Length: 261
Ligand SMILES: C[S@@+](CC[C@H](N)C(=O)[O-])C[C@H]1O[C@@H](n2cnc3c(N)ncnc32)[C@H](O)[C@@H]1O
Image (tube, rainbow, N blue to C red):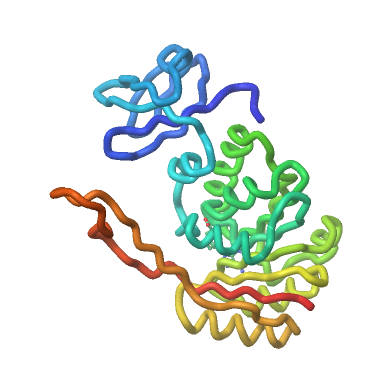
């Protein structure tokens, strides 16, 4: 954790801002110029605060708030899919987990939360402009969360991974791939999985899941589960009652989980 405190501010539209309580004046996009320590210290969680023209509510920086406030560039894996990936891969404290590509770090935030101090997170990203965003989000999460894993970042193509580097971290308990081409990545990392470890692929289109399935079998990984998760949110109806909200019932991705036996 950092020596300074972080808080989350939520505006009336539900947009959140992660703010470090520094004593200097800062400029935050959407909030303008203000002095966080002077304006926010001493305010209780749930208390209203006025910054410029905006009325905001002070919140604690827990995982849902950190995720909602994150900087975004590449498309992120949502909490819906992160939950399934973490539970089906059985990820928890002490594990060594490799993730590619890092992108904006949406999934990494969830992994960091469950790995805690005893876990190891290895992120791989071939585009530095994406890694800059993902690593900034992870740095903020490290400052906010009580525990954070040992983190190693590798800049480059997962298919050309230097095996010696990865092996120096120990065998991998889990691998999660969110890439356009899963096959070459599976070919590169399957051998680094520990016996009993699992690999997951996040595949926006069907051809990707089919290719991933074949690549897993070619590498003697047993496909344990493949499919997608549908999420339908409910809310209060304007004339009373509770019902599904009018909104997208969208596809995020097909997920595949494979087991090394
Ligand atoms: C959709 S984004 C990942 C988003 C991330 N899972 C999240 O939740 O924020 C896919 C990322 O994979 C990276 N990428 C694509 N092919 C790669 C490869 N062969 N090796 C490493 N990174 C790669 C892209 O640059 C991109 O940043």
